Image (tube, rainbow, N blue to C red; front, side, top):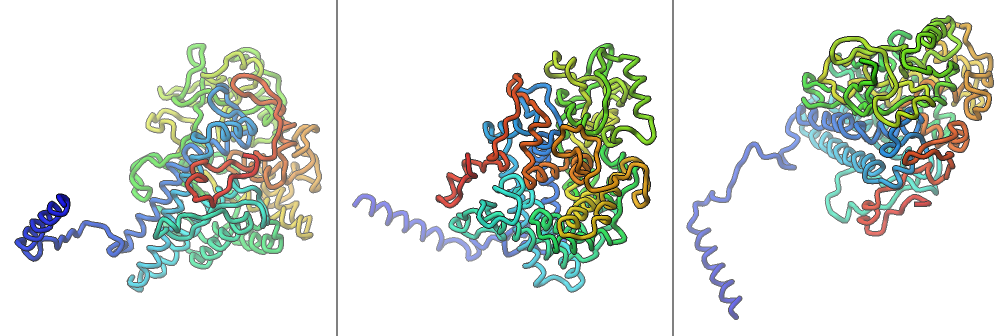
Amino acid sequence: MKNTIITAILIFFTVGILSSCKEDYLDIKNDALITSSSFPARLSDIEKEIGATYGFRSGRIWNFPQVMASYGMEHFMFDGKPDRFPSAMTNGLNYIVNEPELWGENLFVLSYDNIKRENSVIGDIQKYKLTAPESEKQLLDVMLGEAYVSRAVDYFYLTGFYSEAIGDNNTAKGLILSDKIASSREETFKGRATVKESYDFIINDLKQAVTLMGDHEWADGMKGRFTGIGAKALLGKIYVYLERWPDAVKTLGEVVNDPKVKLASTASFKNMWVDGGVDEFNGESLLQVNNTNTVEDSWWGGTNQGTERMYGTAYWKDNAASGTGSWNMGFYPDANIKRFGYNQAHWGTPMNAAYIAQANTQRSASPAAHDPRLFMYAYQPWVDEITASDGKNYPVSYPAEGLTSWWAQFHTFSLKKFTYTNFKDGTYGSQTRVNMPIIRVADVYLLYAEALIKSGGSSATALDYINKVHRRAYGYNPNAASPVDYNSLTSPTLAPSNDQVCSNNPLRYERWAELQGENSWWFDIKRWKLAPQESAYYGYTTALGTWNPIVWDDRFYSWPLPQNEIATSNGLVEQNTGF
């Protein structure tokens, strides 16, 4: 009874107050307020939305999770401080399984965050186009295609890492797919599509993008944005992954025959991996993560949008190893050096004059007895130099951090790809401005060769496309025969004879040698089921400071989904087999 009286009193006073107010008391107008009915209101609103998807990919997804996935899973780096970071493929997977909040969960959660942005901008473009001026509609189509490519890219990497297979598999578990912003909580509850359904979703996005974008080319200040030819190249790559050979040959054939598509020169190829901005838009890269860590480029949001380069380069100063400012414990695996055909004894002692002289002789030979890409991707200690923050040049050394007792066992080459040769400008910090390819021309050439081989097409043409990539690495004209050409599809490579993966397989060797650290080789390992052979070749890894043989487990071909995703799915999302 008491509660009823109190309620009546409150109602009485509320009605009285409202009736005594002016008529427009609750008629609040805020022109700055963004609502679903007022946004987007102009083309610049769409530009900002699309810019956010690029910036998030560069500054968040590819900052830590994606780079570590690439480096650890593809044996691109070895860690001298194994109690903290993965040092090779299997150990990397152990970290993903045992410390998911640091590794696997980040990539999953951040990628889906960006997919929400992409779903939003797709819906907003379609909405704004209904009332947009005719003069804007052609560009809006291009931007809609751009958003479809962006979503396809995020789903492409999610599928490669988290799906139970790479291929045309209609039973294995794939992704949780969404093509729009959920309008209710119930709409967020979705189970996993199959692997085939996941790839078909991506294919549909890319097909729409190719149609919408056509041959549109961005102005010089916008060169980092996605394009129709890039979308077609990624579409062809997916057809290869699915072994849909007729589609792959047709699609990739259209890309390689486009007059704008060609390999960068050897000089540009060397420069595109270091320092940033030197040769980043040389035509080689068809889709890329465009990195910058300056505030000068407003398109990328006016904030630091560099990707974490992860490992600093140590140098020799005052008879000691000094670091360049960020995690100076990483080095290049010795097994990679051998696979590139470089055979030189250990340096023995720092700044060993005989070692330096021998290295200079071997590296200056023409044609080189080793694969020149080794020294495009890695620094040789005591032989190569960097410019430190004081503006002086110093020889590269063994890592400045980590287990120093190891340096007598390892050649300790340092990572060069995606890093700097000049650290004088201290504003770089731990970020890289080097663009990271999603797909580039050399990848397309090798995919086209694979499609021709598997479809029963011309073996001679397939071999020529493999040789184009190989010739460029050695400084020869890609389009003319050279002294380093492979004579057949089973010719010996520079890989050691005990290498079951690359020793007599030019296609595999070139994909490994050319695309290191670019998130392609791990997907090749997964789709070709090569992990047992790769484990045998690399032999040993480290786990918390101890040496262990690499024992492969097939469940590691797929990363586990975050447990929280399963717990909040209303029982619809299942974990990958074995986890």
